[in-house]
Length: 294
Image (cartoon, rainbow, N blue to C red):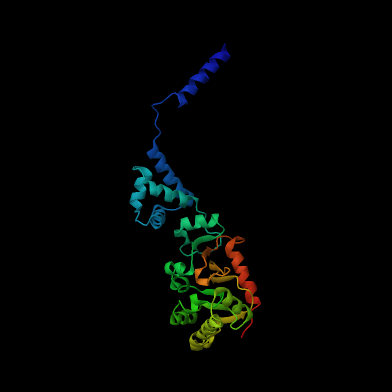
């Protein structure tokens, strides 16, 4: 008898909390949205001002701290704010033990990069990449530039020579590795891309001369020592530009396809070990060790 009463009591309690028989029950979605927004900020340990700044960067419209406080406490936050907050809340902090520039502002890029092994951008051709990412954006603030490829036009043709001298004089270190002019493999590439014999060799020799005469030749002795030039005579596979041990612009050389028409991949280092950045960094380091001088 006592057991039956306990069961009846339990059943009564279950009926009290069950939603199945209470069709009139409606969850407070506005409160849930406010809680979700507050939880995303708490997950990152950010102040209202800091979180509002991150939201503004992602949404491309200004989010004031006052509006954020209202969304967390009184009013219902907009849908795009909730999506942005969710992305920011799932963003992991820097893993490299140092300042990461404005990466903290780019939560969406970091989220995608973490999922796709450091890959943060893909462009169908070099011309599209250069239209959207000017050479000045890549090199102006760089302290360490390492490049290998064919003629390195991104540096020698698309970037201001006077500006290059300025950044090197100010302390930037440059390593530039060209495919050897008049070598076996640049001739192979000329045939594959359908260029007249000697055309790529002439362009590459010109770019090397630009660096030597118009850059190194006009620097102080100390600054000139920060520019290193090498050549290699091997099958060309990638055009690589590595910036400050954090960012890489990588372009493969495809069969029977001109370099300007090959896709370009933008990579940002997001882990100490593994990932695409480490792969391209190792490729450059290995090629640099095998370099020769003309």
